[in-house]
Amino acid sequence: MEQTGSKAPVALYFLGLTMAIIALLVSNNHLVLKNILFSVAIIAAGYHVVIIEGIGETIENSKLKKRFTPNSHLLMGLAAIGAFIIGNFWEGTLLILIFSGAQFLEHFAEGRSKREITKLLKMTPTTARLIGADGNTRIVEVSGLKMGDRLQVLNGDQVPIDGVILSGTTSIDESSITGESIPREKSAGDPVFGSTMNGNRSFTMEVTKEYKDTLFSKIVQLVNQNQNNQTKAAGIIQRVEPWYVNIVLTTIPLLVIAAPFLFNWTWAQSIYRGLVLLVAASPCAIAAATVSATLSATSNLAKNGVLSKGSNYLSQLASIKAIAFDKTGTLTEGKPRVTGYYFAESVNREHLIDVIVALERESNHPLANAILAKFDAKERLNIIVSNDIGKGLSGHFNETSYRIGKPASFENVPDEFTRLNQEWASKGNTVVYVAEEEKVVGLIGLMDTPRDDARATVEYFKKLGIHTTLITGDSETTGNSVASALGIDEAITNVMPHDKSTIIDHQKHTYGITAMVGDGVNDAPALVNADVGIAMGDGTDVAVEVSDLALVHNNISKLTYAHRVSTKMNRVIWQNLFFSLAVIIFLVIVSFMGLTDITISVVVHEGSTLVVILNGLRLLR
Image (tube, rainbow, N blue to C red; front, top):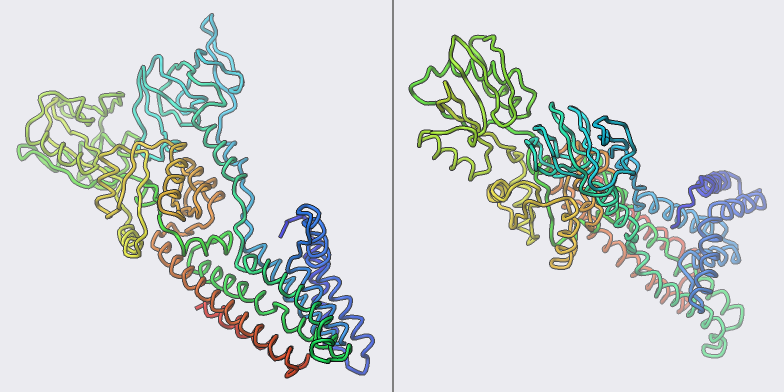
């Protein structure tokens, strides 16, 4: 149903609902007033759904296709008119209330929230410090930068555009691009990307791409493109609608005309039975078949920490053949933890830990936070700390120098530490050495470790024969290590954001319906492109906005719960549809044979509607 953006259709529906309730309370002694109220109710409640969408869209579609193209909205209007003609005003009103209410509820349940691309755009820097020919800097618009321009990027600033470092060393948080939580050290010759966050050093850079071609701009373009290309998948009722409406609209008029000649009915009998058939064939139960199930499932999931932007996405989730996971913040905690450490026997372990804590206390690097979370100092040491890019942290205590840095910054490393470094690094750990007087005496392994419930989640999908994939911007070693630890079928590493959407396209082509789970801006294109995009609730606003489902408490095990509920929802919907159609077929047959009248049809119809609603409400448990 098209969303006009106006609240008038909903207001009219509730006006109609109110009039219907008042009419029910009016005594049968005031039948004229009662029927007038029912008439107002049916016009108000059905104005948008029946008149605008039923008659209006039928005319519009018929003109477009150059043939009569009715929809179920028109059928419901005719069913209500038929009920009015035979004097059953309440039945006609009830049909419209159920159908119109179902349409509005389905719209809110299935309508994908508007993509808030503006939130993504706000993350893009708009100005840059351009270095002129005279060496002076001036603030300019990023959109006006050209390839070859030289820029200055101050500490703590966002990198304004893609380029390469000319001079200076720094560490840059590239999580908005790669999703990697650990900042990357950069020096002259290294590439930098727009919208990433510079660390505590300034540098100069040369622009290598125009604004429209930057990596971050491609993310925005892909989100827009996939958003615009997406079409609302037809719901179950929409799939049933074409043949159902045409059969009813074709059969009943033919019956009314042919019955006097074929069955010796009088014209009065023919018209009456035709109207009874129209009421019998009205899809009350079908209209309620999906709404009760989908709203119950949606409510159940919401109470359990899974928010859905549409029942269609829940239905798709039950049918997935492949699921892709981002690594950082999705399968892993999103921040490094100390996974192991080793100190030489020749050193005073407690004193060395005191030194390590004193050095790391002066750093704001994520690795420092992880080390401080792991080690407790017995004695608080006051050490003047130097933080040198490429060398790490260094300081002196009691005339002894100490340094913590990456392995490549040390020479003449003892074999035992080299062996451990290689072993731990092969498992995806980031390793730092601890040195005393430049002699390595210890090493610490850190890693963004998998969530406790990640492996069980992966195993759940694998048991169902669903292909699992890890997609990450991390190195092959780290990605393969995490995938192996969790039992994931496939790991795709060193991936840039614009590649993720392409990978999802490949997965959809290879396996079929594909889901994507992520939490960052860099996941947005893939989340939108996937048949079902699933965001970790603590992820970026953009990831949550463009996704179809959100795991509110960042509990990935809730994804398996959502899949079980969605599978049951689909099963209940099909039960309801088959039951509803069986009841309609039964009523049509007995009505055609003259074995029922309008009262019996109404009772059976409303009974079947109640059954499908109660069946759907089972999903609340």
